[in-house]
Length: 84
Image 1: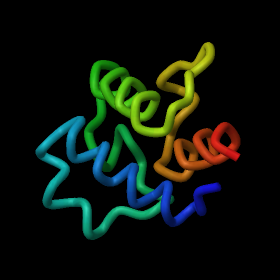
Image 2: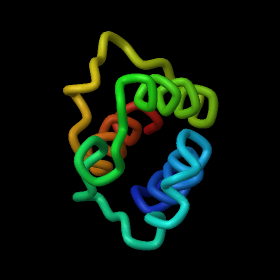
Image 3: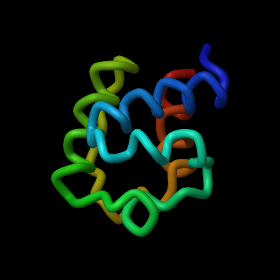
């Protein structure tokens, strides 16, 4: 079972993979960081993130939309509920 901190660390790698421009922001992001407002995510960025999360964590996203994930914490909570 992964801890929230371990999920967060893996998610940081995924965020970097999803959009390299986030490299400069990785040291300052936390669970309250907003995907759209703070990181500039688009629907395409979220799609890439979802695919990478599915592969990395071995989970399958159900019927979710970009609006389901406002912050990094929302994404971590979603993953945490599925990898336990």
